[in-house]
Image 1 (cartoon, rainbow, N blue to C red):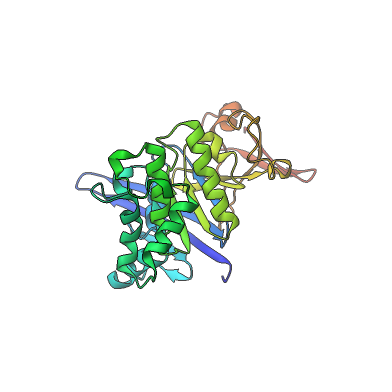
Image 2: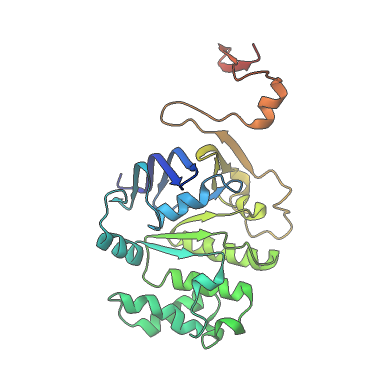
Length: 292
């Protein structure tokens, strides 16, 4: 447990209205170690944003368990949750309007979270964070004076203001061009190299292919995991690589705690099943799934 930043076991989330019930997470299991840079991918409605909101303390599970930095989010009081959101996690949103107060300068925005904590030398630390993301020259600029990419870089500095143990980013490159997205990813990579644990939800194919560990969520569960091939680990900054086209990762189907797995839809379609039954056998050190 000491090296685990995130541990989710059998995580379930049900959203209820008067007319319907939506099962957003269906027994999700995941462990993220301290110091990892991990990406989560999945189609809309897969449950990835629900999971990120739970880790951020913005939503509570319906069942299961969720620990972040050794803290049990399932049993936290409201007071403990406020302190958790202030001190343990930092959040970078896709919508820049949620990251910054428009009537404050970039410097004032970075200093704002520090006013809620006991952080000393707030001005100096805010300048240091803006320098880290390459935005110290725009420290006196307000939101409407910054481009989308510049706003997102300031948002990263804001999220780091109280030195969180875990940095969460929801589609951080979703509204910027490719060049800016590469720069933002380089910022995350450098932060991670210095020991920051980072969890990113993204649709950006190029960004996800440059991450050493990518978790795919489908229908509210972990379906597969991609791991960066060793030969690409030291080539992340090479501009001649088309990360959208290159096969940079090995993909593994993930067994959950009950040894269940999700078989990719395209493979099931190739079997031409007429119902939901398959034959399974063990041959020559391989598990074989067949049409009856």
